[in-house]
Length: 470
Image (cartoon, rainbow, N blue to C red; front, side, top):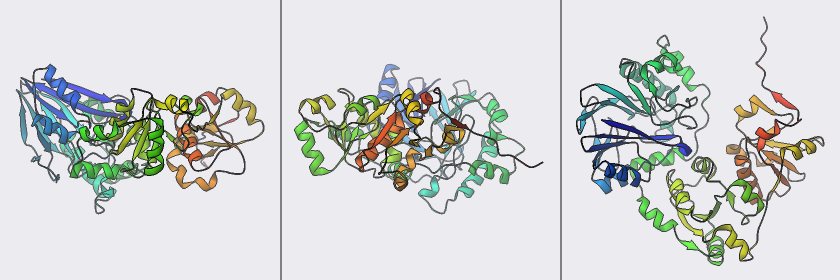
């Protein structure tokens, strides 16, 4: 039996490839399925099953395209109600993949249909556990996502179910099982995942806060719900796409790969009012960009931030990328359900500039320049997360996290200049482009962000533990 983790860093997502005696199972595939088909072909194997651990919220799964292209059967755990042909398995049901076996273990809590899959090798030895969003390395799945789709499923109810699933279904399993979760650090599906993407179940029993054997149900629920942040707005929309179905990625690619010269691009932009999305690096975007375009660089958490900042998942999108990067951008958009790319700028921004079209810029300063300007007490806006700001920040800086900026526009001055920064420059350039689009002009971005600023002679406020009276 061969088990391979296929990890995609920009989504902190893990899919799994299991092969035995010429048959393959894929677990929680991404939207683009050709790599799985090619992998099976290289092994001279046939994809037999597509196992889904649950209806995912943070990405659109490739189950439908993969089943259509390979005739594989889609499998969900108990209580799932997909809007397409699939096997809804029973708790304890066993599926054969070559000489290996996959046993269904229903583990409601993250969602009601959440299911883990126990992998059993050709010799009958229990090898590993595909845990989906039920159990992560160092964490467990958040129980507050399903209520955004089904109101009656409160986070308290789901947390209680998860308590039972962990203690009655997972913790009794062998310590030497390898835990194969669906996500690693950086995913919004948990709150404190480790950077490691696999571990033994025994080590997790000793180190994972949610698996402490002495926890009461009430303690578990309280600890699990404490510190949860608001999930990104696209999550419920991705869930519905995964339940109801969606367009084939082939159709999306055909629509999105329409190349437009600068004149045609300008006509479409003016007539159809799409979002003009510039996927170049922040440094290049700052030097020149199409007016009213928004910068989401491909080199960062591209799809996650679009999901956070673009509320309409059906928003028409025109792309500006480096030549040759158009297909990657369309695929990464589709992973989170933004399927309505309607074309891209042929030749990229250089072609736009060469055609003599209007160009805008964002002023950037170095950390050294920031240190000099700080002596004049400028308005400084820190767009990092509150937890980052609370840990350490420039003295007097105003914290407006990027994902909340649209709700706090009234706090951003229009009658005086201000300086934006994040940790490294990626998020602050998204903020700068959004503000430029909305009419703010007198702003400056710090290249290198707080990571560079804190090396300068600038007053920084450190986190202090609250004092207690003895």
